[in-house]
Image (tube, rainbow, N blue to C red; front, side, top):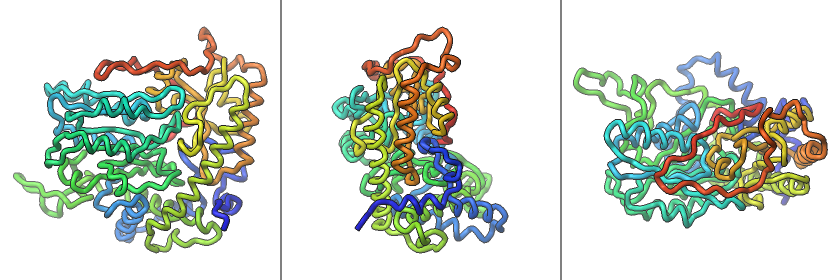
Length: 479
Protein backbone atom coordinates (compact mmCIF):
# COMPACT_ATOMS: atom_id res chain seq x y z
CA UNK A 1 0.00 0.00 0.00
CA UNK A 2 1.32 3.46 -0.97
CA UNK A 3 0.91 5.77 2.01
CA UNK A 4 2.14 8.88 0.18
CA UNK A 5 -0.21 11.81 -0.04
CA UNK A 6 -2.06 12.13 -3.34
CA UNK A 7 -0.77 15.65 -3.86
CA UNK A 8 -2.08 15.89 -7.42
CA UNK A 9 -5.63 15.50 -6.15
CA UNK A 10 -4.98 17.57 -3.02
CA UNK A 11 -3.90 20.55 -5.11
CA UNK A 12 -7.25 20.59 -6.91
CA UNK A 13 -8.79 21.89 -3.68
CA UNK A 14 -6.72 25.11 -3.77
CA UNK A 15 -7.05 28.15 -6.01
CA UNK A 16 -3.41 29.27 -5.69
CA UNK A 17 -2.16 26.42 -7.88
CA UNK A 18 -3.23 28.36 -10.99
CA UNK A 19 -0.83 31.21 -10.22
CA UNK A 20 2.29 29.22 -11.09
CA UNK A 21 4.03 30.47 -7.96
CA UNK A 22 5.74 28.29 -5.35
CA UNK A 23 4.28 28.88 -1.89
CA UNK A 24 7.17 28.12 0.43
CA UNK A 25 6.23 30.38 3.34
CA UNK A 26 3.66 28.15 4.98
CA UNK A 27 5.00 28.61 8.52
CA UNK A 28 3.60 32.14 8.31
CA UNK A 29 0.18 30.88 7.22
CA UNK A 30 -1.27 28.34 4.82
CA UNK A 31 -3.65 28.73 1.91
CA UNK A 32 -7.33 27.90 2.60
CA UNK A 33 -8.97 25.25 0.41
CA UNK A 34 -11.96 26.25 -1.73
CA UNK A 35 -14.32 24.33 0.55
CA UNK A 36 -13.33 26.47 3.52
CA UNK A 37 -13.67 29.79 1.74
CA UNK A 38 -17.13 28.71 0.60
CA UNK A 39 -18.05 27.64 4.13
CA UNK A 40 -16.80 30.92 5.55
CA UNK A 41 -18.89 32.94 3.12
CA UNK A 42 -22.02 30.92 3.90
CA UNK A 43 -21.54 31.30 7.66
CA UNK A 44 -21.15 35.07 7.46
CA UNK A 45 -24.77 35.40 6.35
CA UNK A 46 -26.20 32.56 8.46
CA UNK A 47 -28.50 33.14 11.43
CA UNK A 48 -26.32 33.16 14.61
CA UNK A 49 -28.81 31.15 16.65
CA UNK A 50 -28.49 28.13 14.38
CA UNK A 51 -24.75 27.83 14.96
CA UNK A 52 -24.76 27.25 18.72
CA UNK A 53 -24.87 23.46 18.52
CA UNK A 54 -22.35 23.46 15.67
CA UNK A 55 -19.98 25.53 17.83
CA UNK A 56 -20.10 22.91 20.58
CA UNK A 57 -19.45 20.14 18.09
CA UNK A 58 -16.52 22.14 16.70
CA UNK A 59 -14.88 22.31 20.11
CA UNK A 60 -15.33 18.56 20.32
CA UNK A 61 -13.60 18.11 16.97
CA UNK A 62 -10.63 20.25 18.05
CA UNK A 63 -10.39 18.36 21.34
CA UNK A 64 -10.40 15.02 19.51
CA UNK A 65 -7.76 16.21 17.05
CA UNK A 66 -5.23 17.00 19.80
CA UNK A 67 -6.24 14.20 22.16
CA UNK A 68 -7.76 16.43 24.83
CA UNK A 69 -10.06 14.54 27.23
CA UNK A 70 -12.93 17.00 26.67
CA UNK A 71 -13.86 20.36 25.20
CA UNK A 72 -13.77 21.79 28.73
CA UNK A 73 -9.98 21.92 28.41
CA UNK A 74 -10.05 24.37 25.50
CA UNK A 75 -10.18 28.15 25.39
CA UNK A 76 -10.22 30.10 22.13
CA UNK A 77 -8.21 33.22 21.42
CA UNK A 78 -7.30 35.29 18.37
CA UNK A 79 -3.76 33.97 17.99
CA UNK A 80 -1.09 31.95 19.77
CA UNK A 81 0.41 35.10 21.23
CA UNK A 82 -2.83 35.96 23.00
CA UNK A 83 -3.17 32.38 24.25
CA UNK A 84 0.30 32.53 25.81
CA UNK A 85 -0.53 35.89 27.38
CA UNK A 86 -3.65 34.28 28.82
CA UNK A 87 -1.46 31.77 30.65
CA UNK A 88 0.87 34.51 31.88
CA UNK A 89 -1.91 36.68 33.30
CA UNK A 90 -3.71 33.67 34.79
CA UNK A 91 -0.54 32.62 36.62
CA UNK A 92 0.47 36.16 37.55
CA UNK A 93 -1.00 36.19 41.06
CA UNK A 94 0.44 32.76 41.90
CA UNK A 95 4.13 33.60 41.53
CA UNK A 96 5.90 33.88 44.88
CA UNK A 97 8.96 35.92 45.67
CA UNK A 98 12.01 33.90 44.61
CA UNK A 99 10.22 31.82 41.96
CA UNK A 100 11.57 31.43 38.44
CA UNK A 101 10.46 30.62 34.89
CA UNK A 102 12.68 28.52 32.62
CA UNK A 103 12.52 29.37 28.91
CA UNK A 104 14.55 28.12 25.95
CA UNK A 105 16.56 30.21 23.50
CA UNK A 106 14.61 28.49 20.71
CA UNK A 107 11.40 30.35 21.49
CA UNK A 108 9.29 32.57 19.30
CA UNK A 109 9.36 36.08 20.73
CA UNK A 110 5.78 35.58 21.89
CA UNK A 111 6.88 32.83 24.27
CA UNK A 112 9.64 34.98 25.75
CA UNK A 113 8.47 38.59 25.81
CA UNK A 114 5.41 37.99 28.07
CA UNK A 115 7.60 36.26 30.67
CA UNK A 116 10.30 38.91 30.36
CA UNK A 117 7.65 41.60 30.93
CA UNK A 118 6.18 39.70 33.87
CA UNK A 119 9.58 39.31 35.58
CA UNK A 120 11.08 42.70 34.71
CA UNK A 121 8.11 45.06 34.41
CA UNK A 122 4.91 43.77 36.03
CA UNK A 123 5.74 41.82 39.19
CA UNK A 124 8.41 44.30 40.40
CA UNK A 125 5.62 46.86 40.74
CA UNK A 126 4.04 44.55 43.30
CA UNK A 127 7.30 44.07 45.13
CA UNK A 128 7.82 40.50 43.94
CA UNK A 129 11.13 39.23 42.61
CA UNK A 130 10.70 36.48 40.01
CA UNK A 131 13.52 35.45 37.68
CA UNK A 132 13.61 33.98 34.19
CA UNK A 133 16.31 31.56 33.09
CA UNK A 134 17.30 30.87 29.47
CA UNK A 135 18.31 27.38 28.33
CA UNK A 136 20.81 27.43 25.47
CA UNK A 137 21.02 25.30 22.34
CA UNK A 138 23.93 23.79 20.44
CA UNK A 139 24.99 26.41 17.87
CA UNK A 140 26.06 23.78 15.34
CA UNK A 141 23.23 21.28 15.49
CA UNK A 142 20.45 23.57 16.71
CA UNK A 143 19.46 20.99 19.32
CA UNK A 144 18.33 22.12 22.76
CA UNK A 145 21.01 21.61 25.43
CA UNK A 146 19.08 19.30 27.74
CA UNK A 147 21.85 19.23 30.33
CA UNK A 148 21.77 23.00 30.61
CA UNK A 149 17.98 22.98 30.73
CA UNK A 150 18.01 20.43 33.55
CA UNK A 151 20.51 22.55 35.51
CA UNK A 152 18.15 25.54 35.40
CA UNK A 153 15.05 23.74 36.72
CA UNK A 154 14.81 23.55 40.51
CA UNK A 155 12.30 23.51 43.34
CA UNK A 156 11.49 27.20 42.72
CA UNK A 157 10.67 26.74 39.00
CA UNK A 158 6.96 27.35 38.69
CA UNK A 159 6.84 27.05 34.89
CA UNK A 160 8.90 25.68 32.02
CA UNK A 161 8.19 27.19 28.58
CA UNK A 162 9.26 25.29 25.47
CA UNK A 163 8.48 25.44 21.79
CA UNK A 164 7.28 22.32 20.02
CA UNK A 165 9.19 23.45 16.93
CA UNK A 166 11.49 26.42 16.35
CA UNK A 167 10.29 28.80 13.67
CA UNK A 168 13.91 29.54 12.72
CA UNK A 169 16.00 26.43 13.33
CA UNK A 170 13.16 23.95 12.84
CA UNK A 171 14.35 22.10 15.95
CA UNK A 172 11.81 19.80 17.61
CA UNK A 173 12.81 19.52 21.27
CA UNK A 174 12.08 16.18 23.00
CA UNK A 175 8.93 17.28 24.80
CA UNK A 176 8.47 14.03 26.73
CA UNK A 177 11.95 14.43 28.23
CA UNK A 178 11.29 18.07 29.05
CA UNK A 179 7.98 17.18 30.68
CA UNK A 180 9.86 14.65 32.80
CA UNK A 181 12.30 17.33 33.96
CA UNK A 182 9.46 19.73 34.76
CA UNK A 183 7.49 17.02 36.54
CA UNK A 184 10.42 16.15 38.80
CA UNK A 185 11.29 19.69 39.89
CA UNK A 186 9.60 19.44 43.30
CA UNK A 187 7.95 22.86 43.03
CA UNK A 188 4.84 22.92 45.21
CA UNK A 189 1.90 24.31 43.24
CA UNK A 190 -1.05 25.88 45.11
CA UNK A 191 -3.14 22.72 44.66
CA UNK A 192 -0.45 20.57 46.28
CA UNK A 193 1.08 19.08 43.12
CA UNK A 194 4.88 18.89 43.27
CA UNK A 195 5.86 19.75 39.71
CA UNK A 196 6.64 22.65 37.47
CA UNK A 197 3.98 23.48 34.94
CA UNK A 198 4.93 22.94 31.28
CA UNK A 199 3.74 25.31 28.55
CA UNK A 200 4.26 24.17 24.94
CA UNK A 201 4.07 26.61 22.05
CA UNK A 202 2.84 24.23 19.35
CA UNK A 203 2.24 26.80 16.61
CA UNK A 204 4.93 25.20 14.40
CA UNK A 205 4.54 21.64 15.71
CA UNK A 206 0.88 20.80 15.32
CA UNK A 207 0.50 21.49 11.56
CA UNK A 208 3.00 18.80 10.65
CA UNK A 209 3.04 16.17 13.38
CA UNK A 210 0.67 13.97 15.36
CA UNK A 211 0.25 15.51 18.81
CA UNK A 212 -1.53 13.99 21.81
CA UNK A 213 -1.77 16.38 24.75
CA UNK A 214 -2.93 13.67 27.13
CA UNK A 215 0.08 11.46 26.38
CA UNK A 216 2.38 14.47 26.57
CA UNK A 217 0.92 15.52 29.94
CA UNK A 218 1.64 19.18 29.24
CA UNK A 219 -0.20 21.63 31.45
CA UNK A 220 -0.71 24.14 28.64
CA UNK A 221 -0.41 23.89 24.86
CA UNK A 222 -1.15 26.73 22.45
CA UNK A 223 -1.46 26.79 18.66
CA UNK A 224 -3.00 28.88 15.92
CA UNK A 225 -5.21 27.47 13.21
CA UNK A 226 -3.98 29.67 10.36
CA UNK A 227 -1.06 27.30 9.76
CA UNK A 228 -3.63 24.51 9.37
CA UNK A 229 -5.53 25.73 6.29
CA UNK A 230 -7.80 28.27 8.01
CA UNK A 231 -7.97 32.06 7.69
CA UNK A 232 -6.19 33.91 10.53
CA UNK A 233 -8.04 34.89 13.67
CA UNK A 234 -8.48 31.70 15.72
CA UNK A 235 -6.11 30.01 18.14
CA UNK A 236 -6.56 27.34 20.78
CA UNK A 237 -5.24 27.09 24.31
CA UNK A 238 -5.37 23.65 25.87
CA UNK A 239 -5.03 23.42 29.63
CA UNK A 240 -5.11 20.46 31.97
CA UNK A 241 -8.55 20.70 33.51
CA UNK A 242 -7.44 20.62 37.17
CA UNK A 243 -5.00 23.45 36.42
CA UNK A 244 -7.59 25.54 34.59
CA UNK A 245 -10.02 25.13 37.47
CA UNK A 246 -7.44 26.42 39.93
CA UNK A 247 -6.47 29.55 37.98
CA UNK A 248 -8.08 32.94 37.65
CA UNK A 249 -9.25 33.72 34.09
CA UNK A 250 -7.25 35.98 31.82
CA UNK A 251 -10.18 38.32 31.07
CA UNK A 252 -13.46 39.14 32.76
CA UNK A 253 -16.73 40.16 31.12
CA UNK A 254 -20.33 39.38 30.34
CA UNK A 255 -19.63 36.29 28.27
CA UNK A 256 -18.27 34.29 31.22
CA UNK A 257 -21.07 34.73 33.77
CA UNK A 258 -24.03 32.49 34.58
CA UNK A 259 -27.40 33.79 33.46
CA UNK A 260 -28.76 36.31 35.95
CA UNK A 261 -25.95 35.68 38.43
CA UNK A 262 -24.39 39.15 38.51
CA UNK A 263 -25.33 40.79 41.82
CA UNK A 264 -23.83 43.72 43.77
CA UNK A 265 -21.96 41.39 46.09
CA UNK A 266 -21.66 38.19 44.07
CA UNK A 267 -20.79 37.04 40.52
CA UNK A 268 -21.10 33.42 39.45
CA UNK A 269 -19.04 32.22 36.51
CA UNK A 270 -19.84 29.60 33.90
CA UNK A 271 -18.32 26.14 34.04
CA UNK A 272 -15.24 25.45 31.93
CA UNK A 273 -14.56 26.44 29.24
CA UNK A 274 -17.10 29.25 29.54
CA UNK A 275 -15.25 30.91 32.40
CA UNK A 276 -12.32 31.58 30.04
CA UNK A 277 -14.23 33.78 27.60
CA UNK A 278 -14.94 37.35 28.67
CA UNK A 279 -17.23 37.94 25.69
CA UNK A 280 -19.28 35.64 23.47
CA UNK A 281 -16.92 33.16 21.76
CA UNK A 282 -15.64 33.40 18.19
CA UNK A 283 -18.24 30.99 16.86
CA UNK A 284 -17.40 31.56 13.20
CA UNK A 285 -13.67 31.00 13.67
CA UNK A 286 -14.21 27.90 15.79
CA UNK A 287 -16.51 26.28 13.23
CA UNK A 288 -14.25 27.06 10.27
CA UNK A 289 -11.17 25.87 12.18
CA UNK A 290 -12.81 22.60 13.18
CA UNK A 291 -13.98 21.98 9.63
CA UNK A 292 -10.45 22.74 8.43
CA UNK A 293 -9.15 19.96 10.67
CA UNK A 294 -11.81 17.65 9.27
CA UNK A 295 -10.83 18.61 5.74
CA UNK A 296 -7.17 18.04 6.60
CA UNK A 297 -8.07 14.45 7.50
CA UNK A 298 -9.86 14.06 4.18
CA UNK A 299 -7.01 15.55 2.15
CA UNK A 300 -4.52 13.23 3.81
CA UNK A 301 -6.60 10.05 3.63
CA UNK A 302 -9.19 10.43 0.84
CA UNK A 303 -8.74 13.69 -1.10
CA UNK A 304 -11.15 12.59 -3.83
CA UNK A 305 -14.17 12.30 -1.54
CA UNK A 306 -15.20 13.91 1.75
CA UNK A 307 -15.52 11.63 4.76
CA UNK A 308 -15.20 14.06 7.65
CA UNK A 309 -15.61 17.56 6.21
CA UNK A 310 -19.17 18.80 6.77
CA UNK A 311 -20.44 15.45 8.03
CA UNK A 312 -20.29 15.60 11.82
CA UNK A 313 -18.75 12.13 11.79
CA UNK A 314 -16.82 11.47 15.03
CA UNK A 315 -13.07 12.00 14.76
CA UNK A 316 -11.01 9.21 16.30
CA UNK A 317 -7.41 9.31 17.46
CA UNK A 318 -6.57 6.46 15.08
CA UNK A 319 -7.79 8.55 12.15
CA UNK A 320 -5.84 11.60 13.28
CA UNK A 321 -2.69 9.50 13.69
CA UNK A 322 -3.07 7.94 10.22
CA UNK A 323 -3.61 11.33 8.58
CA UNK A 324 -0.87 13.23 10.40
CA UNK A 325 1.58 10.37 9.90
CA UNK A 326 1.11 10.76 6.15
CA UNK A 327 1.43 14.54 6.37
CA UNK A 328 4.57 14.29 8.48
CA UNK A 329 6.28 11.75 6.24
CA UNK A 330 5.45 13.79 3.12
CA UNK A 331 6.69 17.10 4.53
CA UNK A 332 9.81 15.40 5.93
CA UNK A 333 10.50 14.15 2.41
CA UNK A 334 10.19 17.69 1.07
CA UNK A 335 12.37 19.06 3.87
CA UNK A 336 15.08 16.44 3.27
CA UNK A 337 15.05 17.30 -0.43
CA UNK A 338 15.48 20.98 0.38
CA UNK A 339 18.29 20.29 2.86
CA UNK A 340 20.16 18.16 0.32
CA UNK A 341 19.67 20.65 -2.48
CA UNK A 342 20.62 23.73 -0.50
CA UNK A 343 23.73 22.02 0.89
CA UNK A 344 25.21 22.09 -2.62
CA UNK A 345 24.79 25.87 -3.05
CA UNK A 346 28.13 27.72 -2.72
CA UNK A 347 28.36 30.21 0.13
CA UNK A 348 25.24 29.02 1.95
CA UNK A 349 24.77 28.30 5.63
CA UNK A 350 21.74 26.23 6.59
CA UNK A 351 20.65 26.41 10.23
CA UNK A 352 19.26 23.78 12.56
CA UNK A 353 19.31 19.96 12.68
CA UNK A 354 20.79 18.29 9.63
CA UNK A 355 18.19 15.53 9.46
CA UNK A 356 14.61 16.24 8.39
CA UNK A 357 13.23 13.79 10.96
CA UNK A 358 14.55 16.02 13.76
CA UNK A 359 12.91 19.22 12.56
CA UNK A 360 9.64 20.75 11.50
CA UNK A 361 9.13 21.18 7.73
CA UNK A 362 11.11 24.39 7.37
CA UNK A 363 14.64 25.30 6.37
CA UNK A 364 16.29 28.66 7.18
CA UNK A 365 19.53 29.78 5.55
CA UNK A 366 21.76 32.70 4.63
CA UNK A 367 23.93 33.37 1.59
CA UNK A 368 27.37 34.79 2.38
CA UNK A 369 27.60 38.52 1.81
CA UNK A 370 23.92 38.96 0.96
CA UNK A 371 21.14 40.57 2.91
CA UNK A 372 18.39 37.98 3.61
CA UNK A 373 15.58 40.37 2.72
CA UNK A 374 17.25 41.13 -0.61
CA UNK A 375 17.54 37.40 -1.28
CA UNK A 376 13.85 36.94 -0.50
CA UNK A 377 13.05 39.78 -2.88
CA UNK A 378 14.96 38.07 -5.67
CA UNK A 379 13.19 34.81 -4.89
CA UNK A 380 9.86 36.60 -5.06
CA UNK A 381 10.69 37.93 -8.52
CA UNK A 382 11.52 34.35 -9.51
CA UNK A 383 8.06 33.22 -8.40
CA UNK A 384 9.14 31.73 -5.07
CA UNK A 385 7.44 32.94 -1.89
CA UNK A 386 9.72 32.65 1.12
CA UNK A 387 9.98 34.17 4.57
CA UNK A 388 12.69 36.68 5.40
CA UNK A 389 13.69 38.43 8.60
CA UNK A 390 13.99 37.26 12.16
CA UNK A 391 10.88 35.03 12.01
CA UNK A 392 10.14 36.40 15.49
CA UNK A 393 13.03 34.25 16.76
CA UNK A 394 15.35 37.01 17.91
CA UNK A 395 16.93 35.04 20.77
CA UNK A 396 18.25 32.32 18.46
CA UNK A 397 19.45 34.71 15.77
CA UNK A 398 21.38 36.76 18.32
CA UNK A 399 22.75 33.60 19.96
CA UNK A 400 24.32 32.69 16.60
CA UNK A 401 25.80 36.17 16.25
CA UNK A 402 23.93 36.93 13.03
CA UNK A 403 24.02 40.55 11.84
CA UNK A 404 21.47 41.56 10.84
CA UNK A 405 19.51 39.07 12.98
CA UNK A 406 17.73 37.63 9.96
CA UNK A 407 17.59 34.68 7.58
CA UNK A 408 15.63 33.36 4.61
CA UNK A 409 13.17 30.57 5.32
CA UNK A 410 11.41 27.97 3.22
CA UNK A 411 8.54 26.14 4.92
CA UNK A 412 6.43 23.39 3.41
CA UNK A 413 2.88 22.10 3.62
CA UNK A 414 0.97 19.05 2.43
CA UNK A 415 0.20 20.72 -0.91
CA UNK A 416 3.84 21.35 -1.86
CA UNK A 417 5.58 19.04 -4.34
CA UNK A 418 9.15 17.81 -4.86
CA UNK A 419 9.24 19.75 -8.14
CA UNK A 420 8.45 22.95 -6.25
CA UNK A 421 11.27 22.25 -3.79
CA UNK A 422 13.67 21.75 -6.70
CA UNK A 423 12.50 25.01 -8.27
CA UNK A 424 13.03 26.89 -5.01
CA UNK A 425 16.52 25.41 -4.55
CA UNK A 426 17.45 26.22 -8.16
CA UNK A 427 16.37 29.83 -7.61
CA UNK A 428 18.63 30.08 -4.55
CA UNK A 429 21.53 28.61 -6.54
CA UNK A 430 20.97 31.13 -9.32
CA UNK A 431 20.99 34.01 -6.83
CA UNK A 432 24.17 32.70 -5.21
CA UNK A 433 25.87 32.45 -8.63
CA UNK A 434 24.89 35.95 -9.74
CA UNK A 435 26.18 39.36 -8.69
CA UNK A 436 24.78 40.89 -5.50
CA UNK A 437 21.69 43.02 -6.05
CA UNK A 438 23.38 46.27 -4.99
CA UNK A 439 20.21 48.30 -5.01
CA UNK A 440 18.84 46.12 -2.24
CA UNK A 441 21.96 46.20 -0.04
CA UNK A 442 21.84 48.26 3.15
CA UNK A 443 24.11 51.28 2.88
CA UNK A 444 26.91 51.63 5.38
CA UNK A 445 26.66 48.04 6.66
CA UNK A 446 29.32 45.53 5.60
CA UNK A 447 28.22 42.16 4.34
CA UNK A 448 28.52 39.51 7.04
CA UNK A 449 29.14 35.90 6.05
CA UNK A 450 26.51 33.56 7.49
CA UNK A 451 28.79 31.63 9.82
CA UNK A 452 27.99 29.85 13.05
CA UNK A 453 29.52 32.03 15.74
CA UNK A 454 28.54 30.63 19.14
CA UNK A 455 27.36 33.34 21.48
CA UNK A 456 26.02 31.69 24.58
CA UNK A 457 23.35 33.38 26.66
CA UNK A 458 24.28 35.35 29.74
CA UNK A 459 24.08 33.61 33.14
CA UNK A 460 20.63 32.96 34.54
CA UNK A 461 18.92 36.13 35.65
CA UNK A 462 21.19 38.57 33.83
CA UNK A 463 19.61 40.97 31.35
CA UNK A 464 19.52 39.73 27.76
CA UNK A 465 21.14 41.70 24.99
CA UNK A 466 19.12 44.67 23.85
CA UNK A 467 16.75 43.50 21.12
CA UNK A 468 17.37 44.79 17.65
CA UNK A 469 14.61 46.18 15.52
CA UNK A 470 14.80 43.12 13.33
CA UNK A 471 14.18 42.87 9.62
CA UNK A 472 10.74 42.61 8.18
CA UNK A 473 10.31 40.24 5.31
CA UNK A 474 7.69 40.52 2.60
CA UNK A 475 5.17 38.53 4.60
CA UNK A 476 4.38 37.97 8.27
CA UNK A 477 2.12 35.43 9.91
CA UNK A 478 -0.57 36.36 12.41
CA UNK A 479 0.67 34.03 15.16
